[in-house]
Image 1 (tube, rainbow, N blue to C red):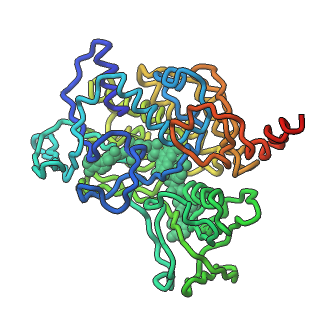
Image 2 (cartoon, rainbow, N blue to C red):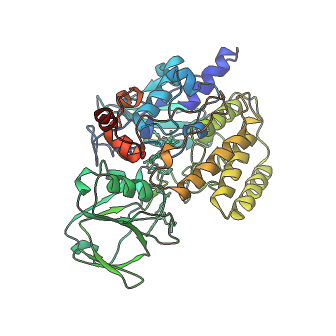
Image 3 (cartoon, protein in one colour):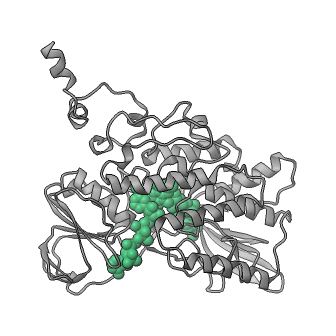
Length: 455
Ligand SMILES: Cc1cc2nc3c(=O)[nH]c(=O)nc-3n(C[C@H](O)[C@H](O)[C@H](O)COP(=O)(O)OP(=O)(O)OC[C@H]3O[C@@H](n4cnc5c(N)ncnc54)[C@H](O)[C@@H]3O)c2cc1C
Ligand SMILES: NC(=O)c1ccc[n+]([C@@H]2O[C@H](COP(=O)([O-])OP(=O)(O)OC[C@H]3O[C@@H](n4cnc5c(N)ncnc54)[C@H](OP(=O)(O)O)[C@@H]3O)[C@@H](O)[C@H]2O)c1
């Protein structure tokens, strides 16, 4: 969506743009944000793309991801809270793209099956299947931009004895809701965003206990009673899990929050990115140009602090390379640039370092294009406050508000504290419900009804 918007923006400024085709295997756009209840395969028999769940709310402040050329104020017409639920974020990205005339470029329900590169003709042949008709077609292109995401194909480790576990075992990719974990003992394997957020969902929905198992290091948050971290699993014995520190516990359900793999089943190895999930995958000049074939590009291949606005910065740069507005340096210079960034990347120690690194990366891209520059230092500051707010109160960090660097608008406090909010719909999000008793108690006030009775 960012790439289509980037080309449209150039066209509006009088540039001639190339013929564009966007193949999207789902029936609508929005990628991860195009939620489905389905898991496994979709109605066409394709692997389900999204890893999101029904009650997912943004886990980072929206002030960190805001588009520089389409703000939340413009979209919603009023201030909204800093952590919108997923329906609201889908609405936002859909609103930006729908405002422009770019949907015409998208062939929905078209799955890319294979991409070849002809070394003599210097063109790609893209083989696609129309999932509605079953027909396949092959078309030639001068450039290919891979924007297929990298949080879809689960990384699923094996643990000794796991096949004897009698309860439910799912990967975060298949998790859709925590309601069934009420009164259950739940084990989450992993120590990153999925573990933290799905564990919190389970706690919110009344799990009896939530245990996280970490491999490298614990998340280290100040967990409430009923939530705890244990080191890596040594083995399963039926419903008992033995951790490497000698502790053993019984569990009802296991959720593997063990991340995702970069997997491009439609690409030959010469064109396929192969990287762990990190903020600077190798072999991408300026994080987007495929070093081994400069006619091919990747968007959003990095692990992400910045998201939507970084995708824009990347898309604007890729557009300018394709339009011939930016000349690419020699192969040696590209390598030297990648190496310099990798050297910087190797020195990152803290999360705050990663934020500054990605901020510098986004700045470098925006400086090359006409994408509106914004106060990246201030956005890095917001990300750092977010990190701290989670350390301060992991269950309630979504109640904190931030100020947009794009508009100066301070976010509205959501009408209901996140831990009490059980309705994640856009309708509820934008509504103004009456004060309720639970909220009064949560916030330490006398419940409104009681106060009225007393007076
Ligand atoms: C569980 C989860 C929660 C997240 N929460 C947040 C959040 O709160 N805030 C935030 O900023 N970011 C969040 N993210 C990060 C998320 O990755 C980005 O926000 C964003 O969706 C990435 O966009 P993308 O276009 O790179 O990839 P995706 O959103 O994954 O989109 C890729 C698209 O490519 C299509 N596709 C894939 N293969 C093919 C094929 N062979 N042929 C045709 N089409 C294909 C897919 O159908 C999909 O529409 C979250 C990610 C996950 C997994
Ligand atoms: N509400 C939300 O918005 C929300 C919710 C969930 C996820 N997300 C997004 O989804 C994306 C992916 O997050 P993620 O947490 O799924 O993946 P991730 O950040 O890549 O983390 C993967 C985790 O799995 C662990 N792991 C990997 N292999 C393992 C093994 N063999 N044994 C034990 N642990 C193992 C890793 O441990 P090591 O540290 O040892 O490598 C790491 O803790 C992020 O962009 C995140 O923001 C957002």
